[in-house]
Length: 253
Image 1 (cartoon, rainbow, N blue to C red):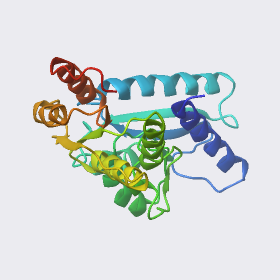
Image 2: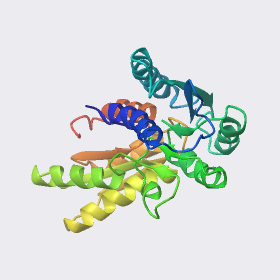
Image 3: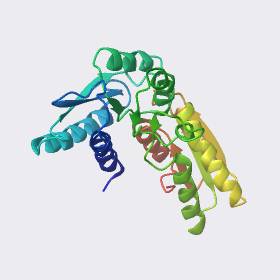
Image 4: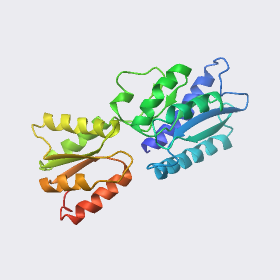
């Protein structure tokens, strides 16, 4: 089962557990439905992934609803576009809470956008379940209305570095997105490599929300690494790999 399948099932299960406990009526929970909100980048650099994940979530909710829903209540997903822009996220979440009357939020994507959501969650006391980010800011310090369910980026990068070192690959470079997501991943890689008594042969970044990776490619290629660890979004990652191949460094992982 994938992380996102677990996330979707966790959301439905959380609603079921809450309702089964005999709790008092809540905003977003009526006699026949449970309204869940989603603030995500339906436009912008992560639009493709967001639309795919949302379609998958809707398929699962449809399956739950076809079997009678959660204690007779159908799950209704209200999605709104924040353009993957953390400046827009708080207002989108406010609208979901005040206008759409959601019971909870889930399937939000992006480290900066989820970080921007936290003050709004705390103000309205509405939970966000399963944010699609593994940044340490989701875990430390703990947040009362935030429920991350995936492994942290740092846990993942530790495993990646450990695997590379065990394979005899020591010349490792890092490319990251210049935002809180990319920097969180970079910190994880640096900590993991420090524990192995090695250091990156090169570190380079690219601007958030772009696929401008030319400078990063030039800096990384110059170091001739055996492997490159990328903490970037998918489109920037694709651009980076394509341009690295043109430099003759296509053998690096």
